[in-house]
Length: 287
Ligand code: SF4
Image: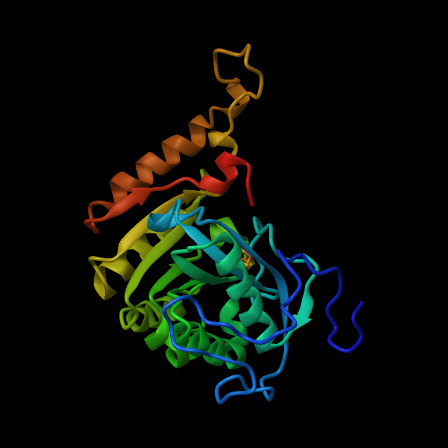
């Protein structure tokens, strides 16, 4: 336990933060620590991990991204596999240096993906971070539950892609839905370069909730892409043995696939762009 910050665990990063200061991407304006812009007054935050990988979800699937994963979330989805992971406290300059180090060693990357947890819980940190990343030439991809519109308003002008959720309580098992928050969030997200909506669904989905989410999109932003994603990845898992020629029936995921196809047909009655996109990193067995 780091008593100074309340966060615990070991750092899980690609490299230790460079001893020297910020260095720009090739061809971008110089940016050094101590210069105006890298304020030591910004409070450190809990970061779970910073790493380079492929974007695993949504229409940008397969692109190389640098992921900056913030620790906490303000809701608790039953299917979440991120909450409770150990984090460390990192300052603004440390995060920037780590991102730039990854860009040098593993780049080029299409985006820096700010994810979590819920990154918008850390908007006081996010606002200067996004500004510095833009100055250094990075594009910003924000992954969010889509329920904190006031925080979004502070940074949306610098965000290139907003990947927002519409949460359905029949899937999250939360006490309530967040349709009003989602409506305002979607309206504001149109100020970003691009926005798409993801709904995590499964056979237990409540059709009234699903339709409310679809109608919300239809009314607020009809052209926005809706991505349907299965709540589990079992239906994408294949037998591991080479000898197997048929899918193990346990892994065919007939119920999930039927649900996804039925929901897509339903949503297409209201929206022009609805896609089923599985999670690439799960299929590839990478993080
Ligand atoms: S919104 Fe995302 S990070 Fe938060 S609990 Fe749900 S799945 Fe986890």
